Image (cartoon, rainbow, N blue to C red):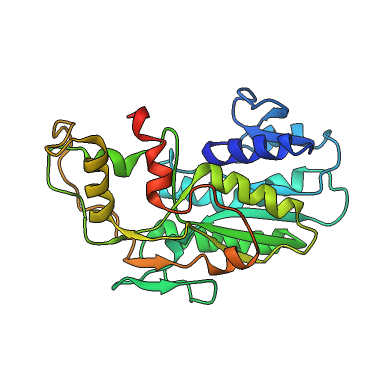
Length: 275
């Protein structure tokens, strides 16, 4: 029940579902969500799950970004969902959904990727995500992998802050693929409501990939900060090589799933007053 998971839990509770949210503190749950304290790295802490009522869906929205140790990061994602699934009572078959990443794709020249594109991760995090997907398939009777593009929303405004720094743009000529946190929550809630079986794989991205330079220029025009706003307090870094690709959401749209923020302008405009 981290950044995306909290929003998903809140959306499902609003729809009238009985929702239990797991985090390490067991506190700070949205209205209507029951919080449970547990840590996927500590098996004994997950014993608290077995007395809960039978479950019919597990949504794994884990966050391993706070772990700098690569081995811990791998254990969180690869072993975590199966550990939780093993600790739960199930009302029927094991039905597990996993929030993954489009970082499992490479790409060099802005080519389009979709659900049929072979995964080719360019970095260790992408390799871990692929291993996590495989572990999920082994742990579930039915499963759905949602590969998310760059997640943004309240409290996650990285591209805005990069645009407003008083230094040259950071990697301006590569494609940015994004999805707003609230759209992730809305999409998951809509999938739960659908009576048809969920897809085994779905790419979750907005309608319009854009070059980072275009986004940066738009932010500066909207804010009137032609010279930048922030001091150069962090030197430019090479950054992780995530490839250069455009993510297609054609399948998502074919399923009739809604997007409140179909492009970067509609999503970032609401966030500008928060900067």
